[in-house]
Figure 1 (cartoon, rainbow, N blue to C red):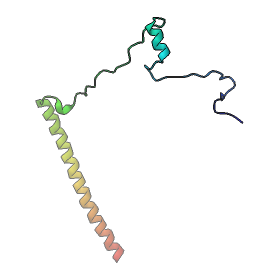
Figure 2: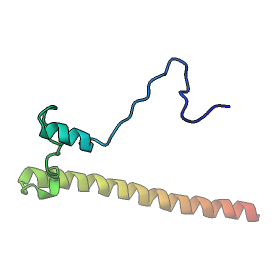
Figure 3: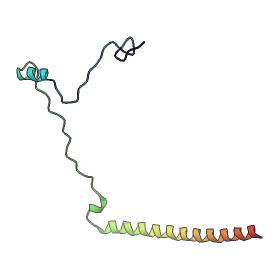
Figure 4: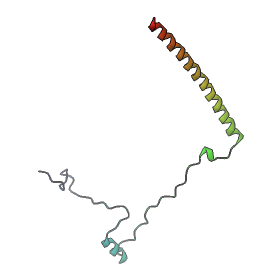
Length: 102
């Protein structure tokens, strides 16, 4: 019967205990106070969050507006194509329904 505290592999005979980063024991604190251990390194503190530059927050320029008009023209072309396809689809479905009824 295998117990949970036994190592899973014969070669793995050492247990490694890990603490939360930056945490220390009372013993370590006393030893640091007596200067037997080096001082604790400062805890990692990430830089404050700064959001990335957004296109909407940039100042408006003529070139940016020109780019938007090109995008709008492309979208209008797509809309015209989709309207045509939708109309063609309706006509084709009506024709198919007529052939089924006959």
